[in-house]
Amino acid sequence: MPNHSLNNTTFPSLNVYLKSEEASLSFSSSHKQFNLKTQINQSKRPDVQTLVGLTNFECPYTFYLVNKNNNNLGIKVGGVETNITITHGNYDIYSLLSEIETKLFEKATILNCIVTTTFSESTQKITFVSSNSNSIGFLETTTCDRILGLEGSLPTPNADLSLNFTCPNCCNLSGTSSIYIKLRGLGLQNLNSKGEPDETISKINVEVLPSNFIFYEDEAENIYYLIDNSIIKTLEIQLLDDEGNEIDFNGGFFSMVLTFHFAYRREEIFNPNAFLYTPKFSIKETKK
Image 1 (cartoon, helix red, strand yellow):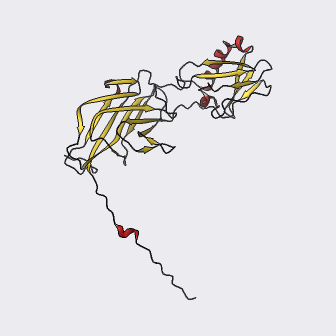
Image 2 (spheres, rainbow, N blue to C red; image 1 turned 135 degrees about the vertical axis):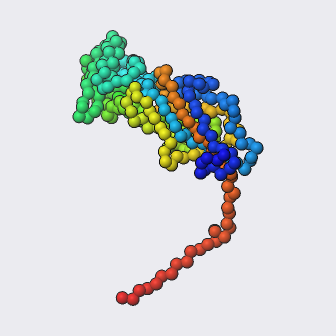
Image 3 (cartoon, rainbow, N blue to C red; image 1 turned 90 degrees about the horizontal axis):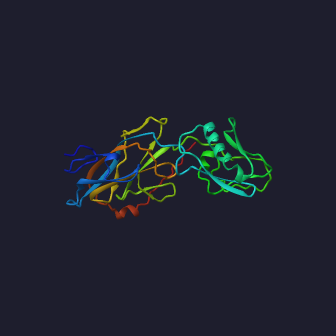
């Protein structure tokens, strides 16, 4: 029977417990489809609507700072262009710069110079230094721009003959701040920052360090969303990072609980007299 204040029907609310390793279809480690043997079906009652909310979630912090979405650095020294690929993994600033310098050293013959790096702890900015008199710039092929402090400045101007280039922004090795959980195909009517329709059902903050578990539990005032489908046969889940890319869990699994409630459709109340109402004000003078 009904077991939640949002449920005013005779249909019992229900939980759906999802484990990524038990998905019917796996598009990636963070994109799964679950085919339900028992359908969620209230189509026999057209006066009943379905509500859904995320009430529990957990996953391991096994995804990397540098991954397939942000591992390319395109550099131009003088008139020579080349690209390097940063090895996937988690880095602090010094291990990251060591990795970049190693990869750039392998391109020294192509660039006709050796490119090194320095890091200012006071400004949190990275400087690239050329061993010859040619200027340094970065190409639009660069995908690690947010990490290095190049975001919003690609391609960089390099007309001046300069031995070094300091990234305009602070480096950012914090990784994704949140995990965005999308529930595909159910008609969620949320909006993103551009005001476009968005199927995100919840945003989970990443508040732990790598190798720990990220947990989310139902808060005191959880939001439930009205969905279009009266018959739910499949649930398609997609987990994205801050930049809208699918998260690579590197073999890790996630689990979650989706809670469904059922409520009678509300009748629209229209009062034509409400548009004819004109407020009246009276001004009383006070004698001094």
